[in-house]
Image (cartoon, rainbow, N blue to C red; front, side, top):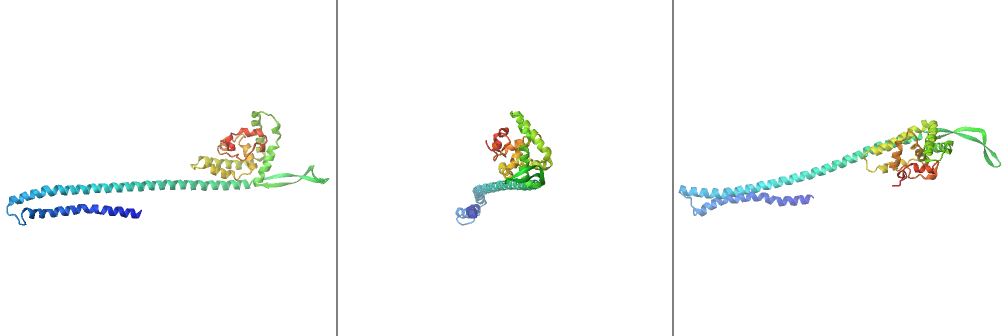
Length: 291
C-alpha cells in the first residue's frame, strides 16, 4: 500500500512543476521577444515601447492567467482526493466502531449470562430434601419391606432431588381421574399444585431463576439465541426436564410455556417418559425441536 502511495506521489510531483516551469518560460520570452523585435538594441522611441508593452501584456497576461487557472483546477482536484480519502477513512472508522460496539455488547451479555448460570447452579446444588427409607428384612433370600418399619430419612441434595420430585409427582393418585384432554389439563394443574404445596421452598427459586435466564436471552440483542439456550439445557438432567414439562403446564407458569416452545427445550423428551403419553400433545411441536 505504501509503494502505491509513493508511486502516486511521484506522478503528482511533475504536475506541480509544470506551472512554475511554464511561468518561467513565459517570463523569459519577454526579453527574447524584445531583442527579436529591436534586433538586440534598446528602442529610443516611446511609442515603440508602448506598442511592445501592449504586445507583452496582451500575450503574457492571458498565458499566466491560464497557468493560474490550471493550478487552481489541480488544487481543487487534490482537495477532492483528500476529501474522498477522509470520507473512506471515516467509513472505515465507523465500521470498526460498530464492530467494537457489537463485540462489547456480546461480552457484556456473556458476562451476565454466565454469572446467571453460576447462580443457577448454586441454587440447584443447595436444594436438599429428606427421603424416608423403608426398613427391609431378608426372607427366603429376598429383601422385603416391613409395613410399619422405617429407617432414618436419607438426605438428598442437588440434581438428585429431581428424581425424587418426579417420582412423587408421577405417583399422585390424581392421575387416575378423567380421560379427556380438558381433564388432563386440570389433572396436571391439580397434581403439580399438590406437589408444589409440599416442595415449593425447594423448587420455586430454581424455576424462577431458570425462567429469568431464558427471558434474559430472549430480550437480548444477541444473534444466536438458540446457542445460549442450548448451553442452559445441557446442564439439566432428564428428571429436571420432566419436572419443567409439568411446571410449564401448571397454574402460575403461563409465561414459561411460550419460552419452552420458542427455544425447543424438550428436544430430548419422549412421550414414553411422561406420566401419560397423551401429555406430549399439550405443547406445540416446536418445543420438541420440530419446525
